[in-house]
Image 1 (cartoon, rainbow, N blue to C red):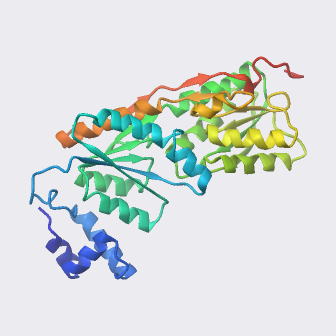
Image 2 (tube, rainbow, N blue to C red):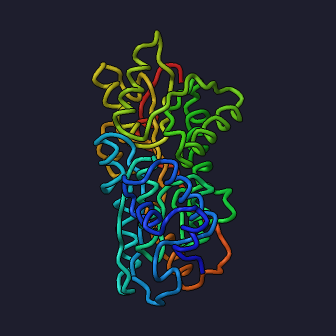
Image 3 (cartoon, rainbow, N blue to C red):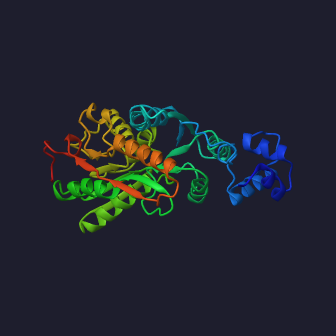
Length: 345
């Protein structure tokens, strides 16, 4: 078993320095920190007495780590009933009666947060990772040292356990509905953050579905960050043009709600003047007027299955990595134009 002494010897530092790096101390220079972290990854060292074989007792704690993407609006989306809270409730439901507790931590991409994730790995029996809080190679390295399950990761992953919703089929269904049922031709897409696998898949599905229709045109792609505020900003871009697209497809509901409210403030009618769709089917999508056409993904089931898989991997480390793809369903409501008359369609 690799020990802290091995790390110190290979890195050419003292064990005290290794300890400071593990704790995230600011008393270590950047060069030294990077050298020690590289050795930790190379040797597969987990800074934990249990992981080093000094104790066989489990902590009965599972960690859940996720990203915060910007300001308060995204915090609301990711930390309340709109997304992460659904994952948390599902995980707690699975853990109830098992003796395991759930430890949560959230942060923004960067060295400080990555260090927090590494440090957390020494305090828990396994990690649920919402999206890719670390680069793929780092996640795989972490998974070699402890049980890790990724929620909303990349479906092509072969070395990690991944739970992901079928973004491609859901987005294709909504775009197909706009093209075939309503005969919209010029479609704008409000994309999510480029570092989110879900966002990348949904943009790819949008582009492929429009091109596959042969008569649709990608009018414009505007990048947001999954927050309502970035939807508001996208709508302002559209309002600054000489003409609007016929339909706006958003990578999630929160951005779609931002687009809707900003268009309505400007006197633009949805869906009479421009159609609108989202993705996720969060509860507020049913409260806006018009109600939002969207894609329903099984968020609670994602959380439950991910937690079940993590418990299984804690019990049996040699399980082969699997990717579970959960189905999505198009939910047709009024914002796409269903139930409304629209000139030319």
